[in-house]
Image (cartoon, rainbow, N blue to C red; front, top):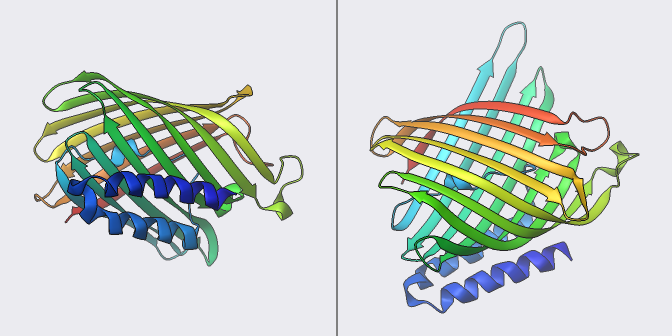
Length: 277
């Protein structure tokens, strides 16, 4: 059921793309992304997609990576890598994002997570747009074997200037979640819920080579508003060259109903490099 729902969403987006001659050359890329998600089934809990958007017209590709290494009294390495593919033409935007993270400390794995996301956005006017999306996630250390979701909603451009954008988005999404049965006893191992996803996104291009962004998400469960997930992502990017930039990201996450023995709060800071191709 999870995979057929995601497949239907991908098929709908591809059909929409195929019907527009300006997007036909992106069709194969979308199919490839959907296929990769189908077979790999990787990903994180809540994911901020807004920070991956580009304001540039045409097709843009960006790769980013971060590495942490420590040796001596303890041996640690933490590697994260991801990529973004976006095609924007007038009122239409197609965005595909994927990311993976792995870490070990003294031979013990402490991080193993990945995600993939596909989203299509259509602007009906300068201020009002609609979007459909699908996502697959996995995170070993939040007991998440698989989360798959599909959704649709609206975007409102609250404020816009030459180098500044403030966006509010509201969507309904169906979320399918499978947890590690061997590690949960109170929380259900499998669930299917509907969530109301809301976000406010701020993006400021300070100059040609530096950018500041911040996004806040609130995702309550429709039939139980006390079951809410909050996410705040902030990032600062400074260009070294036109293609390479240094990036610092702060991520805060709150889950009011986490699985067994997990904390409600998470905080993560990441330093890395982003390359635009």
